[in-house]
Length: 609
Image (tube, rainbow, N blue to C red; front, top):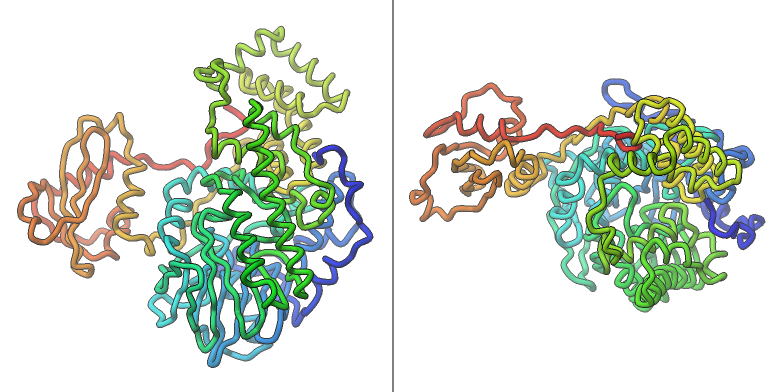
């Protein structure tokens, strides 16, 4: 829903964004769809055709407008020598022409879409080789399509901000299963595109369903002001950790007077904490880096572009845009803490927060992707944590047990449904959803309870200005009616990009602690291609690893020693190899290790117990 019915603050007659989004179109997509090798459609350009019509009653007018803008697709010229592929995925892919080829910035979510975008570019600008890759930050929609533009082992520099690999793995592997499942709600991946279903996520339409991949960076950006020349193009970097991503950077192209703001300044209010889950971001430092960008780059720039949405042209306009984006995050941060220091909790502050009219009326400050409400709660969480200070919150019953008691207190299931219908009739869908959640958790077999909650979610979703709120509500309604959606996991080629230490960390997360309490063994892993040996131990349900110096390898009392290459590791742990492995000691130790690991279930329930 839109707070305070503040759509009247917006000037729907202002067409500037539409003019900017259409500016520089070189060529539309050359095909109706992008397909995988097996024929699956991973991106359908026709899925957004319905957005050409007027806003229906089943959509928030402001979100509908944003979705119309995000539906633009094709190859666009930003300025001389800089092009963007937009509308091929959730994110943009930028192509910067160098002396001999083209440098790719942020190659989308999947290899198929990135390859299709590069092919469209080459059809218009010639068959230029890829001479460099830049990852602006550690989210999958900015590196997942890497193998669609470069081959593994290609002699191409890959530039990324410091700790890029560490944070890419932490987000996409360590908590990847849970984030992927919640990401289905976040992006509305299983919703039918259309006026009553998926209309976008604010940043773009949705994420593609192709093959993600990752290649490790070969050049790390470790400080602001660092300069790198790629294929004759001078890049000047601004390191911005703990902003929109824990590892992120902006860059300036001084000779082309062009500024890339990665995902730190886009045409919407972003997330301090995404609904799919992530590390809570620092709104204070985010605002400060935007101030630095204004002071350092704005006066030397004629155009600003980003990893989502459309560019902003003109020094004065882009300076105002960056300044207002800065004020947006700073205001939310400072006012949240002001109210917290008066004793208000996160949920209370979220209801109290109102943006200054100048920001509330700016199209690029609207909450299409991150809302004021959940961003305020995230800022509170960053400083104060999950506990709201009330002792009753310390030891609450879990959802199902609480639900049974609430429903009993309210007079039973039929009484709760009657009350919920009354609140819906009084246009209080928010509270209807709260009590119907208890009804469903207390009586998960009640078709009436699930259908009424589904209808309530639909009403809330159709009114939401935030695209991710809409998708969460409508996915909840869909699963209440149809059951849990199967969430396919496609890790693509990411596993091969992990370090050995990261692979072992990902195993540790999967150890079933109670099952492994009584296990105790140590193994040595000699990697011949890395010239390195790891000690892996399982004790007390905890899997630990460490690099063992060559001089101390003989001192390790190991139950099993394995000799292998890094490439064999993924196959061995995944159980996809039948080839014998060089070893000394008890090979059953390896089987005991694998037996201690849980298989992750990416299709767990969310709106039902």
